Image (cartoon, rainbow, N blue to C red; front, side):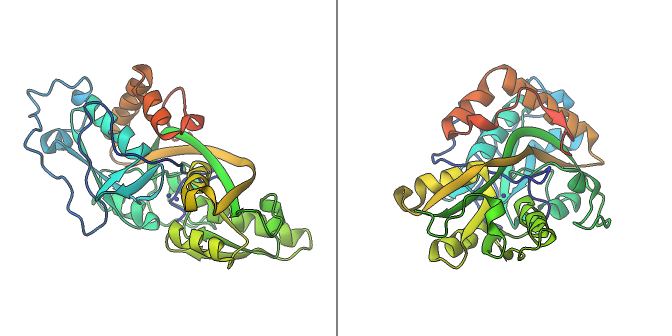
Length: 321
């Protein structure tokens, strides 16, 4: 789900929609959700560096080979990209991660936390990767805040998906909102620290530059709170990743709560975030993403979750602008 560590941009933000449990053939079981939930940790089945026959195992850094586990941080609140079901973290990203783990010969152990703290936690060593529909952009690559001030070392991204920004409203569109441009002077809900919050900020400036009123941006700690605000009428619209918005519209109140207005805009890549000092892991993940694209596993995962529109043809490192 990107403090401006979320997704996702050229101004974009995105995540997706659908339900189901993890079902990639042979995929390793991913951990349950929440910071209070213990991860799957060291599995009794993990192989030693000398016996692991996974095709890309040798590309991994030795410490991860020895551990047999790749620790992943996420914010499991963005169905169908990543969400909690039955005490487990499931969705597009966990399924892709499990498939990558098969190619690399390690488990991928997910832990859910706040979205705007994922990159900080990654660079502190808590996670090996962050995978949470994070938009790859120059700001995150370089560790900058919204004003260009240096906040940290930044991260490298292995891009694996593409998504844009969507505006959703109450079913029936009672306020007649047809696009993000119609939000001038109106209250709009969004998750704090995401690229789509930045999209609202950028649009609000366009409003004032044109002599109109600024958007009354209502940032929330998580996306569920933003959705509730729109549903209650406290905000005329919410802004989210396109796939997440699609999933929300399909499922909330059996499809009777929300609708999307306008088209997906500012599509940009989602990337797996990796510490800049860990180039070997970045290259191993790039090879693994390309491997699951080539053997068809990637396509099957996206089809399972109804996320085919976000498919890419080839992994890219730091492809965001």
